Length: 133
Image 1 (tube, rainbow, N blue to C red):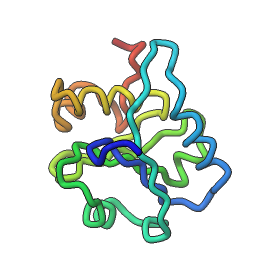
Image 2: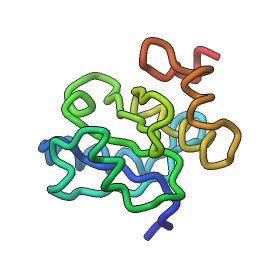
Image 3: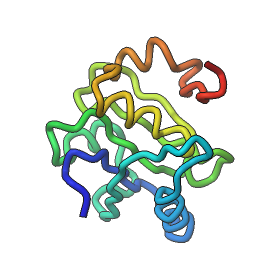
Image 4: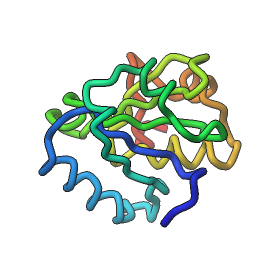
């Protein structure tokens, strides 16, 4: 089991087959050799939960990001995951599933803070793909 400091991916939508595929895909590195270090949590209390409820229910105060998988994630191309600031100080944004490693890497190493990612890397509510830099 991964340590509690790993970002959690919480499911807020009831699509078990697509959720399982997402979990399986997270084990594979991308073409650059990166992947996010994630822990997946599937609990009924998160189904339909909004950002406030997820922040309140989040069990790890040292965490730097909450990744939420919702209906939009499971129904759109790119599987845009909702990235939530656990402290609620910076606005949330979406990142395609294959790009959330950027968020995890930058936050877990202290390279960037959540609000810096929003300011420098997010356009129109979405994380810019690494290819755009």
